[in-house]
Length: 111
Image 1: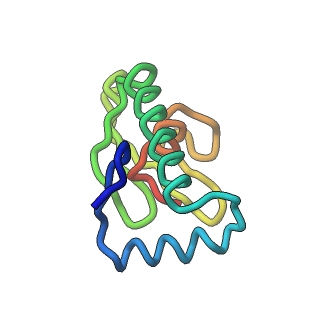
Image 2: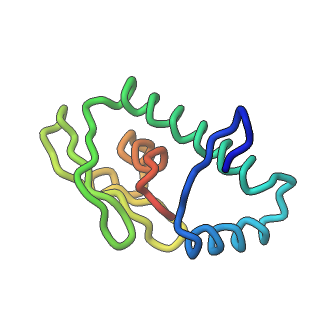
C-alpha cells in the first residue's frame, strides 16, 4: 500500500535490484525513488523537445548498439550508433548533427 499523497510504480524485482546496485556505485546523494523521479521528469522534457524541435525525425527501430531513424525532410532512413566512445551518424559520420541529438535525447537509445 502506498503512502497518502504518493503513487506506486511497480517494476520487476530483478530489474529493480539491478538498477539499484548500479545506482549505488555512482555515489549520488539521492534515493532510488528521488533519482527515478528526476530521470522521469528529464525524459519527459527531452521527449517534448524532440516532438517540438525535431518532429521531422522519427524513431524506426532499435539495434544492438544504436537506433534507426527516418528523416522526413531528407526522405532518408539512417542509423545512429556508438563506436567505442564516439557517437556516429550513418549520414554525417562523426560531425555534429540533429540525428545524434535526437538519439541522445531519446529514451530508447542506450549507451
